[in-house]
Figure 1 (cartoon, rainbow, N blue to C red):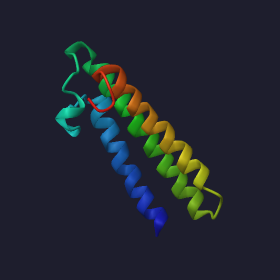
Figure 2: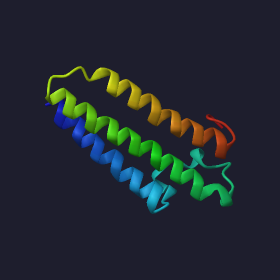
Figure 3: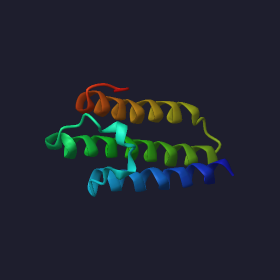
Figure 4: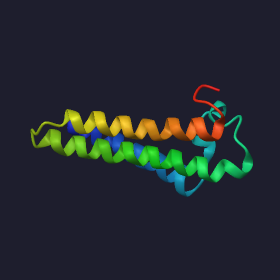
Length: 101
């Protein structure tokens, strides 16, 4: 049952990744995430955020498969979450002037 939940989460992450990274729709983010964003940095920011969400999607798919196979899967989940959220924090810090600004 948990594997199905993580597969559903991964579909959501991939959908958001495509909307942000490919279609450049920043309406999927709250306005305070891009309030200090310069217009010329918008495409690069959205692409990096899309990559972060795609990494989370891959992480959730991998976790679901390993969970279904009864293999040690927690390191995959934690490393994927760290990498995906780290990429999003980097994009936020670099293009918006700070993580919480």
